[in-house]
Image (cartoon, rainbow, N blue to C red; front, side):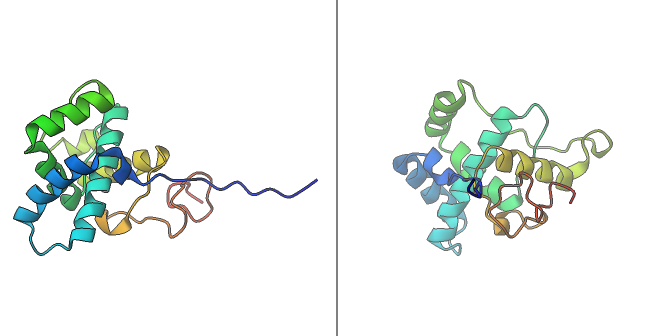
Amino acid sequence: MSDTTTVALTTDPRGLISPEVTELILTTYRANHPDVPEVRALVGVGQMAAFLMACATSDRPLSPSPEVDDHWHAFVLNTEAYAGWCTAQFGKMVHHKPGFLDPAEHGGGKVLRQRAVDVIAALGFLLEDTFWPEIELANCSQCHANCSDSPFTGK
């Protein structure tokens, strides 16, 4: 009998958005954030896409990090592309609802962002820790599924 190790694969969320739509988002984002390197802005598009996938699949409120939110704003401003992407991905819009939820009921911003990271990880997307600075991400494969180093298993 051989010893087999199971490796959790993760998906780069940048592949969720076409190159043409990514370019629209990047152009809008970089107009407002010209000091952000292009490579970082591109990674941000992926983190935003993963966050939107989490929003579409979660029945609980989630919150993006400020930097992910800036990417979302850049996408929303391209209304046709955003509406088309949401419809193609989810069959509905993922609406941006700014505002504050009652912390007593929902846990506050950090809790909502942690929940977002948990859902993104459960969906199998790569997480870039510098886009989620309040959240302590594991320095491993980001699988968060029975990983002894994962901050999400309580081990």
